[in-house]
Length: 213
Image (cartoon, rainbow, N blue to C red; front, side, top):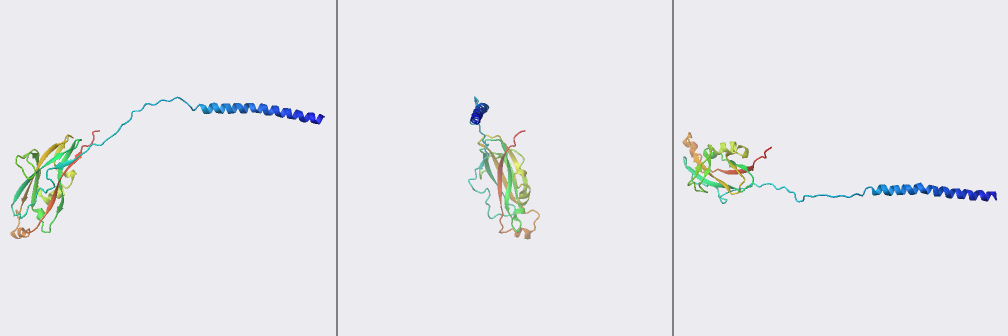
């Protein structure tokens, strides 16, 4: 009897302990729920949509319609000639146009050493017609094609600078004048140039101005 009473008492105490232990567990669970819910909050945003950046454009054309400025045949010692060409900027940013030469084809006889070229910047005239041309700046001085290809072979060393304002449609005229100069040559040296040919590209390049700091 005592033994069973003792067992019953132990069961009652166990139930009490279990019930008592359930209380802090419930509190812990409840506390966990409160901790989790603390992450929720009201929020609001303001947005300015559609910000964008677009680069400016630089573009340059001329009125040669794909034709070479000079195509001279049967060239004779002492002969000269000139051609004009209009260069137009359609850029919408300010920049500078410079003139230089590239792609010189050299001959074993050195014809390029005796063809002198000068380039003027101005107004008036059109492709193949220099009527009304008026120079407005210091020209690229007369020099042989060989010397020009060495001294004015890129934008950095280009001449006849022209500052554009960034208004599409701006234009300037250029006059290129050449001469077959045989000064100081012997007759044999002149004769050695018969039947020879050389060529060069005249280049006009526009680069936008560097941004101000």
